[in-house]
Image 1 (cartoon, rainbow, N blue to C red):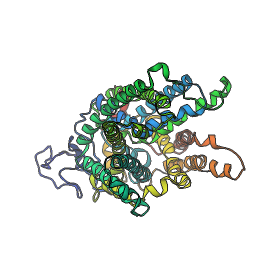
Image 2 (tube, rainbow, N blue to C red; image 1 turned 135 degrees about the vertical axis):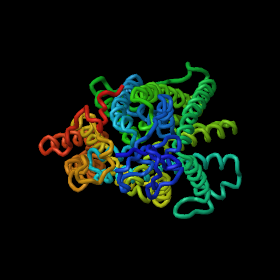
Image 3 (tube, one colour; image 1 turned 180 degrees about the horizontal axis):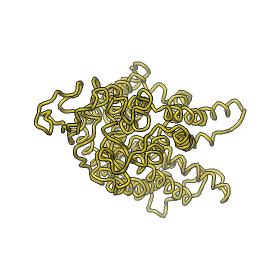
Image 4 (spheres, one colour; image 1 turned 45 degrees about the horizontal axis):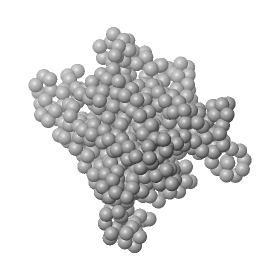
Length: 534
């Protein structure tokens, strides 16, 4: 099999000219990395964006910056602050934060390995588990989830941008109240459109530009957070005037606090479940698995704890400064009288939200939709499908509706856990970290990942059997409580764990009872063995 390094010249290693795969352009996603396409790769499974990278150039800092962009958002700020409202002491909240984020770090390292070792994105690694055709199932599920959240995050960021316009442009008030279309004010459309275009421009430039953006966005938010914390502490009269204990409600004794701490840990893990599943799309660019783990360490436990401390300081200081507890950083900035502070803070947190939106909800659906039809949909086209879809769903109409959120995002999100469990079981337990990379791109029925007409029925069944209980745990407790039947609200906080555990266990059992994944020899030259990774 002749190997070709695909660059702008379309030249094979033997020096012969070849026809480009239908549907790819000369400047697709990986403009910072060439990719490898063998002559036997089927066009229905391969394009320049999905095939293995020739060079993996990202360092540990790029992974660290990725997590900074992911953590340093309005959602991350509010989530960290909201845990203090669970009724447990501050030290217990911090313990839950640390335990939860260490669990996330361990799980992210698992997801990162197959993509880093093979140099391919998440949907392609899923071919080794679901089959070369069956991998479209998790790709479509993940793509739809990302489109929904992309719309929501863009809308939330646009709300922050509205504050800046209302503060500095008097005529903006008329646009915010006098005109509306499809449930959104004229000012809302302007802010949403600005952010939509800005994100599309960053995305369109490719992964190298996205990497540079995240490298800068995370430190920028940190700088502003430190400035905001110092400002609020000074305004409050020093640390002596600040009560860092944000716990509310009746104090809990030790035994009562244990289940609440466990719930807090589950909430931390659930908050990161989306980026955790998507992480393979980024770890594929890293130059070593050791660098991935180092970046995850600094970007998750270290970064998250520091950011949480800043969050607590800022939120605690709002009580003596503004007379009320404010856990939304945008509203905190809005309360500051200085125009420059409002402008700087607003732009910074908008940038932070744009950062998490691009890395968590733009890049991944681009790979997912490209994976469905590589001949006609490249990475950029896939991303723009997601961007257009985020407008069509008009997220501002259903984001404020608790029931709509509950029966859409909660339902779809409940499938993230099973997909995670099945991937981990397939790669680590069943396949022993071995993947035949070339077989990920062949439609030959003799290929290792053809299974049954391109589908591994064990993976499909595991997704169904694990997905149904996970969805029930996420969706049913709320209506059952409203009808006064039974209160299972606490169960919904653990839907990810239930889905992931069931997915892992069911798939492992099915593979042992009726094996589909062929055990590969470690010394096979066609096999990538992850056991020798650093």
